[in-house]
Amino acid sequence: MIEIPTFELASYQRAVRTVLAHPVITETYPDPDSLPLVRRWATELRSDLADAFGYRLELSPSTARLLRVMDGLDPTQPARTQTDRPFDRRRYAYLALTLAALGRSGTQIALSELADAVAADATRGPVHRAGQ
Image (cartoon, rainbow, N blue to C red):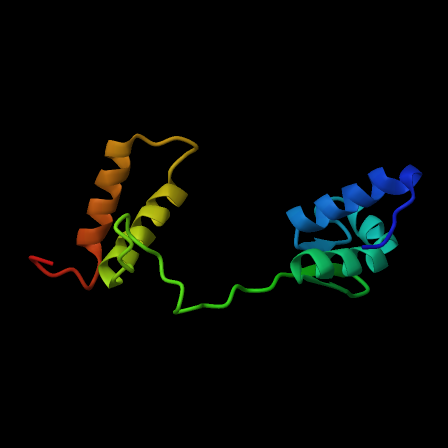
């Protein structure tokens, strides 16, 4: 980690928050001050984001872009049930349907509404077969 002088810490923290909140920054997005701010702290941001998260910051003449590392799939670490059994395909499918329904909902959803949304999505899918 690079040492940031105390009197410049607020500016650096603003740059970090901006890059993390807006992975693509242009001359006008999210605001005209963001790209110059990120450019000013580019060396420190590159070092700190790489050390902390493995992210890479790329700068071009008109943009700054944060490239996040994708998590690798590890088949030796499956999701597990309460009884410690590995998830099967059906459980993963219901987990995906549940997360999709939560993503479409507002900030709150009743459990009954969530169950109804998952059930509706499950019967709508192309692989749904009676009795499965």
